[in-house]
Length: 518
Image (tube, rainbow, N blue to C red; front, top):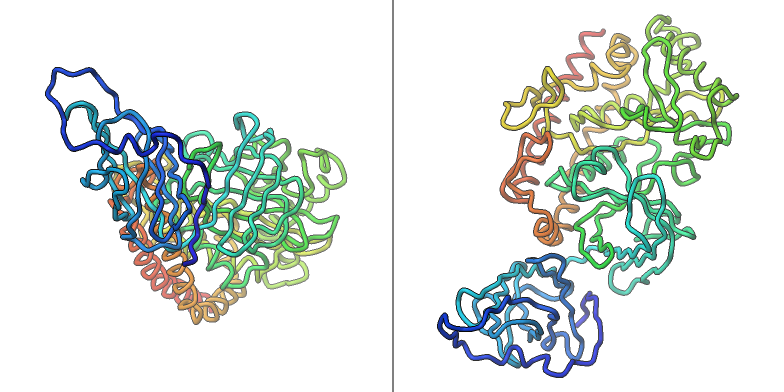
C-alpha cells in the first residue's frame, strides 16, 4: 500500500520496548518521585511493514505523527523510551507488541510510581490528504526582517514527486505580524531558482503565517477571486507544513514574492512596482505625492540596492507621474480620455482590483501598483494581504475596534468605494459602468470561486488539526479580531456564509450606483 510518510530507518536501541513492559500496577504513595517524560517514540507494524514512523515532539505536551496515506483508525505498534513505569494511549495500556488504533487526536499518558506521578501528551496524527512539508535548518537564530540567515531547505512534495534539498537564506517579514504575533512569517531566498510544489521556478518565496485568520482561508478567497476576475498576475500559493530547526511551526501559506519578472509583474527595465504602504517610513526610500500626501515605497527599482535614490531620474519620473495622476483624478476632465485620469490609470485593472477588494471587505490590504514602462498607464495589481477581511475586524472612531466591542463594520458596509482614489473615480459614469460591466462577467463565474475555495478547505482539513494543536487560538479573540469560533469548521462556515451575503450586497450596490450614474 502506497503511503506518504517521513520514514526514518534506525536500529532499535537496547531496551526500547522495555519501558512499555509494565503491568498496570501503581504502588502507594510512599515511593520515590518520578517526573514522567518521553525521550523516543515511534510506531511500526501493520501497513508500515518493516518501516518506522517517527513521532515529532514539538513542545512539552504535543506530539505529532505523519501517517499521510494511511486511514484513520489504523492499528500500529508503539515503541517508547523515557521516564515512566506505565504508558497508555487512549486509555489502553501498552506493552511489547500491543497494537493501538490511532485517530487524528489521541492522548498519551505516562505514569510513574503512583497515580499522582502522571503526564499527558496530545498525539496529533495526519492521515490521508498530504500537505507538502518544508523543513528549514538555520545556522543562526532568525533575529530580524532585514538580514538573511544562512539555512538549508528540504521541500517534501507529494508521493512520487522529487524532494528538493537546497540552501539559501531566510529572514522575518511583515510589520505587526513579525513584531507582535508568536507565529512568525518569513521571507526565503534560495541559492538557485527552484520549481517548488508545481509553481514557477524562482529563488524568492514568502511564508505567510495566517495567525489571526483562524479559517486559514481568507488568502485562498482573495487569490481565487483575483484570478477569476482576471487581474494580470496572481501569486502562486500552496499550504504547507513548516518545520523550523526541528520544531513544527504550523500550517503556512507558501507564496510567490511580489517582484518583477516574466512570470510575475512583467515590466520593462524602466518600469516601476510601487506599494501604498502604511509602514512607508520604515522603508529605505519612499515618495510622497504633493496633493494627497500618499506615500509609496518601491518594489522595483530596488531601493535597498540603490537602484533608485531620492532625486535621481527614476525617482523624479515616478514622483512627477503620481503628482500628475492625482491632479487629473481630482481636477481633470473625466470625460477626456487623452487629458483626464484615463491618461494615467489603467481602468481595467483598477476596476478588477476594486471588485476583488470590495467583495472581500478587505480593511487593511497592501495596494501594489505597476507601471510597465515609461509612458504606460498605471495598473493596479497584484492583490496581497487579506488577513483583516471577510468580517473579521472592524474600524471604530479611534482606529481598530477590540473585543468585546460591537463591530461597526458589517457585511453591507462600503469599504473601497470611499477609500484611496475610488471615491473620486465613482463620480465618473464611465468608471462606474466599467465596474458594473466587469461585475456582470465575473458573477457568472462565482460557482468556480466557491468550488475552488471549498477544495482548498478540504485539502487542509486534516493539517489544520495539527496547526491548532501547535497554536491554541481557536475560541479566543486575537488582536483586533472581533469574530471567533470554537472550531476551525465553524470559522470556515462563517466566511463562506459571509461571502454569499457580501456577493448579494455587492450586486445590489453596484447596480444602484450604475443606474444612479446614468
